[in-house]
Amino acid sequence: MLPKLTHLQFFVLSVLLNGQKSGRVVRDLLATEHEQKKTLASFYQLMSRLEDAGMVKGWYESKHVDGVTIKERWYEILGSGIKAVEAQEAFYLS
Image (cartoon, rainbow, N blue to C red; front, top):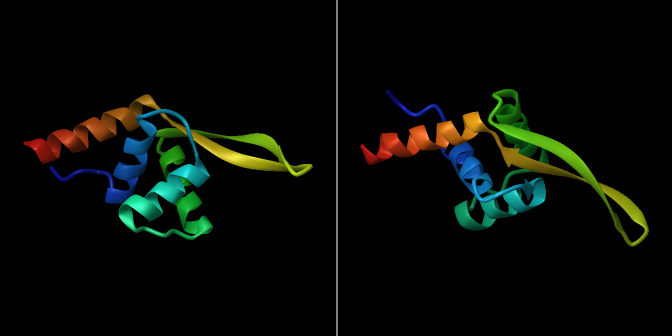
């Protein structure tokens, strides 16, 4: 049986195995480590699909930069996301 995750979904979930990350950090890692420069819209669409699938949880945090309040999206991997990563790793190791 083929894996259910795309390579980008697998990478994002793998990054989140190391703890909560902001969307900006995950997007930057995609660009630097996988040369996948996603537009904001396509990146957040990818993240939305992972949220809809119940693999990640996302929320907004506010911070102040030079007197301006900025909302930043943060993510963490959920149990089903961990299981999906483990299943994909097992597929490639077998």
